[in-house]
Image 1 (spheres, rainbow, N blue to C red):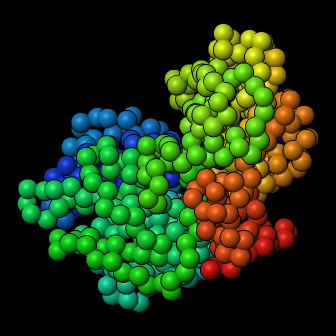
Image 2 (spheres, protein in one colour; image 1 turned 90 degrees about the vertical axis):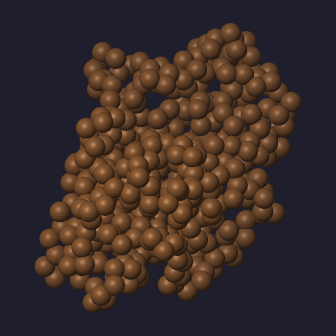
Length: 488
Ligand code: SF4
């Protein structure tokens, strides 16, 4: 097992980005800052907003850090006037953390200004980038998203939307985009709809409603917008002063929405693809209890993300639910870098054992995933030190055996515990008396499907199965490509 001594390393897959856009609201930039704040869980390294003033001038502000720190100053917001804006939260997976990589990216074209924020990951970005550089394109950042800008620049179409469609037809991978030019706000999802994007609206005194695009519905709630619908896989929505129009430039194919959004990435109060995340996580926990029941005294979540699944597990099993681990919410990346003297504190900076709920008890620990196992091992040690008689771990996702290439920050397969060890070995390494994961079919059952359709899976689940549905063009040549499953 690769152990980490970094006390802030939570050993999770990380969502890469969140996007937000507003059309036709007098406080467009302020709404965007609020929306990005609600989407903070999707990226904490940097944020940016591009606003379009009534005079047709684009103003932008970007910064490294949290949304509240970057946009909490009234002077900053005063520099972002206008009735349209788009914004982006970044959790870097491609390109280093630097201001030049902070989105939305902005460029001046012959047709005017254009800003774009991207959630996802392009699997042919390197190939496209090399070709574009050969043609003389000068890249300003190291993020994969910049290929959109250059593909739009060299497109022979005259209309902005046609140029964007031309660019989208050349990229492969996962993308949910919010783009802004002086005539429209545009949202787009890749043909498989891997990453989420929702549409909302709110009444406006001027007659036409205000329109909102956001990664998740929790960002609609914070600004008081009504959920209208999900942007469909392969759809572009173009919003301008005459309303909204939908364009579907790709051949229809079955979607492959990221199943991990239900398990961990999305905020529990969001509704994802028509399904409430919180309730879904409880249903997954209940299914886990049915599959891997064990006699125990208490069900304890690994907070915060394990809480709804643990509630579902407790309700189904009849074992009492208790907060046996307390999370310190004030430990963040902005805290001082750990010195050697405090490194040994490790996970204790973030989690503490609630001894009264653990001592002498047979404990079922419920977590949403095990990635490298480093945090799980420390939490189990902590629970045992608090006097637990037995520790059984139950995980509300199947074993994560493969990396994600579609916009989620994951370690290489070499570092994934489940890619290197069977369940018995994992249990021994983590130090639990028993370990069980929800089965793949159990996960699909909890999501309302009888079971996984192996010929045409209903979701992307490649990090559990290795069945990638989008070609990995940039895959390192020295490694064999994983199997691709057909697109429908
Ligand atoms: Fe989501 Fe896993 Fe697919 Fe990545 S590989 S998109 S994390 S289900």
